[in-house]
Image (tube, rainbow, N blue to C red; front, side):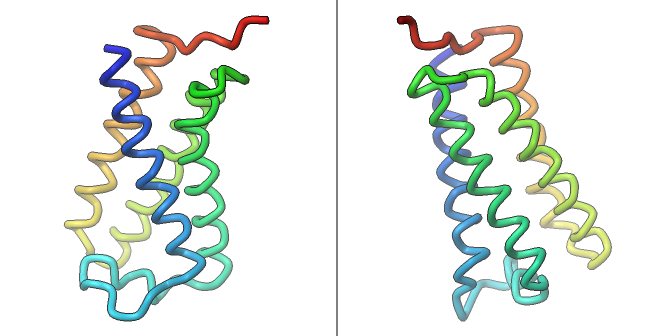
Length: 127
């Protein structure tokens, strides 16, 4: 179970870091599925970008370093909030396929929260 949780943390951690960076350098020619990024205000890009980068780092670094590993649970919880807000944004735009991705991500992040609280908590570095 620990291995599965680590795989999910690393995959979703890098995913959120990449998407977070994309909020700061929105490239031209995005596919239709993510063309909504062109419609976000600069403030929303900055908020989402910072939250996603911090959350992505929080999924990986605390457990990897053993420094404040409980932050992994908080990072996953914070990203759940970001995904709920994203789902609300997409619902207002009738982008239902994006909401499916948001819900799937929320479920996985919820599993990480549950797994790191109840199943295999991360241990702090000793010494």
